[in-house]
Structure formats: structure tokens, C-alpha cells
Image (cartoon, rainbow, N blue to C red; front, side):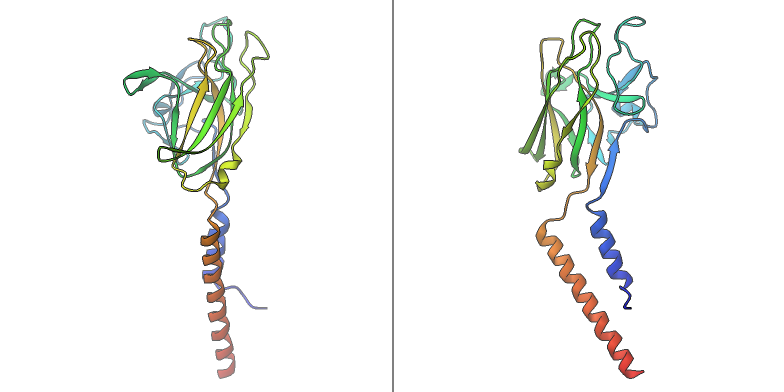
Length: 234
């Protein structure tokens, strides 16, 4: 049996790792999260850093605990997490001189393959945005978009989060980030809640993969020739 040289094995491992999941942003492992009854900017919940799970998050992302109520102690919960205790929402902030909570950005070359979104609840008198759209960006250009309707199935209560499948972004090249747009129902019904953003390393282009495999083939061939020569000498 011929053993694969360590250099070849390492290259194969690198190729395999490049298409494996890079991580999931659950917001439950942030170093300085708010109390479960409170909310704060993701920047502050992340130890004064906008970079989390290989992504630079817009300053308008806010981290919220699962016991947070807009009108305590008897008002409804603001939102529901997908996992454990924390989720994010879109808080208002200045963009081009205008205060808005629309068009939040995530800057990264990782591929977003899924996320979970739902409607929040305001004081028990209405839900938030009824649709979100995630755009994959290449610079300022939109490379692809996926939308998800956010129904209000339980009036007066926040909604369970629903999966938005963005795995189609894996077929795109040149991703530099994402923008989250929302469809508001009214002046005060323009927020959403979200959790479990799943990111994956970009899949190598076919040409890159072919070159790598050809390179591996050459290494294997060279190693084979050397092995035969050493056998003949012995």
C-alpha cells in the first residue's frame, strides 16, 4: 500500500475544510451580553468590537435577551430566540444623515447559507415588519437576493422565528457582504428579530479546484517516481 505524502494530505484537508461550515452566529457566546431583561448594541455586547464570527456587523444591530419586554412587567415579550437566550433586532441609526433601521449591513467574504427571522411585538398592539430581504453584495452591486414573509399568526405576541434559506448564495462569487432590507407595516411596525446566522467558507471555483487537483496529481507522480528509483537502487 502506498501512503499519501503529508503535503498532499494537508492540501486535501485544506480543500475539504474550505467548503465546511465556518460557524453560526447565535449571539449566546458574546463576551459582554446584556441582562436577559435588557438590550444593547451588538458592538457593546461583543466587548466593544463590531467583528463577530468573522463578520463585521452594522452598528444598528442590537442584541436582545429573551426576557426583554418593551413595557415591563406585564407587556409581551419583544421577541423569541431560535436558540438559548439571545437574538438580534434592527435598531434605528443614522445613515447618510437619515435615521433609519433599514438596510443593515454585514461585511464578510463568508457565505450566508441560512438565518432565522420573525416579527417582534410592540406593547401588545401590533407586530413588526412583515417581510425581510437579504441581498448578497459584491461591493455596491447586488449579486443575489432572497426574501421571507414574516406572518403575524399570534396577535399580541412575538412570532417564532422562520428559516430563510440563502444557500443559493453558494453559487455566487465575489461576495463582500450582505444587506437586510425590511418591509414595514407602518411607522412603528418596522423592526424584525433574527437569530442563528449560519456562515460557510466560499466554495472554490471550478478552475481553482482543478488546478489544485492537478497540482496534487503532480506531487503524487513525483513521489511515485522517487519511490521507484529508491527501490531500484536498493
